[in-house]
Length: 303
Image (cartoon, rainbow, N blue to C red; front, side, top):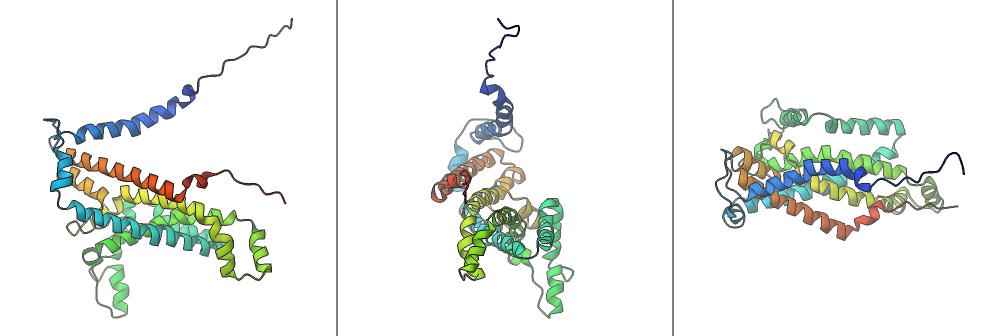
């Protein structure tokens, strides 16, 4: 008999390792959903008092809110245009351009473009307010005045275009970083072999670079679509959702109804609708784009 006996340790239960994550998920995700759902079925107003349990808020959404169709159309235009023109299109263009130039210059350019994302939202919003200022002191009117162009008022005349531009420029940095890493991970021998076979730089981009970006682009599209549907801080700072409701997407509409009008229960019901829309968009894009392939294990080629 050995002096030291081997003891068989019973492995700890997996729930012990998952307990911290479950606690955080419950406190900051599940609990707010439950509270929001409960409030949505009440008549809570600005006094924060609950008088009765009712479904009147949902009846109001489908039958009596005349502004909601316009807000949904604005949201569709805002999310679609910002997503594909800026967050994906411009981000991919920046990634390709910054990897085609010398590495140090490309790193400097990407760092410069990332500054708005790293700066406070208030500072970025004030910058765009100065750019779009309708008076001669606004940056856009200063540049236009130097060429003899008339003054423009983007905040009143083209508010939706202004918020798409502001959100798109800062949002393109996310795709730029992700796609830059994807481009750098492409084996260099693929491009070299294509050039030896007589492919032009456009051919290398089309047949060697673009196929490698399909999976990251699907991930960026899903992530940024959900982000655009649920965030509104830049819009609130730059245009306030106006004039009237011309640049108010669905998420900002919830904020204005709940916190500006004091209709907390109705805002909670609208928030449930946003959650349903987000889940539906996620499953739709997951199915159409086959998102599971995005996180497939890497394949190792032995040459």
